[in-house]
Length: 329
Image 1: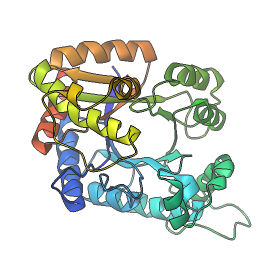
Image 2: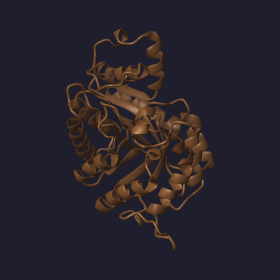
Image 3: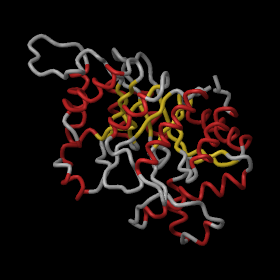
Image 4: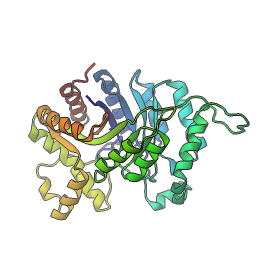
């Protein structure tokens, strides 16, 4: 049985505020902890009015401080946006406050547009040094070395677990070479999923952190009492992905009765391809789909995204998922 975790983008829904989104994230994390989810990750995105987790380490601290046992982390930090030293200090601080509960997933994409990237005072050519930056960050979080004149305080010796995130073969190759766990973003970019996972496992080199390959895959999962109810809730992420294709990102919209009136045939095809790894329906329907997905990918863990507009319905979805997959502790 694969472990189950949550990827929460702290969605800001239409009519709500970023504060509402962050409070909802903490509420969900507290309940997920009771239901037996393994970890709760937040992701770095900038200049997006529908996502409240831009200050990712701050949001992680808020969730970790309000929970007791669930692992909390970044899925992920977009390392080209930052110096490794600053991230080592931030996550060293988190690990010092919440020991053995913090994860640090690292991505190579900027997590924003080029104009915002310039506002971050970063040059996207920094992405070319991503492997070197990962190694530098790993060193800063490791034990103090002889003649090491710059150290992260807190950070040195905390050994915060690193993950490589990706949606292409590049991340798979890097994670394998460094002997780190690998998380594939199949919840929005599924095209290279099977090739990337196969490449990662075939080329994995054991490391001090990890002795054998460990794969996490993303999936969109919405569970409701009936298939029809779940499909209606799913129209919120379907609208969001369509709006992304239109270049019109915004707050998460409420569900609608007929998604076919919202998108064009071409938009439907593109959005549906991006949402290939989506399991929507009653507990029985979702269980059947996820069981097959786990067998096909041989994944060790599934991280679930659920862009459900209504917070009560979202919480109910995650509870139904935990119960139908048998992880409730």
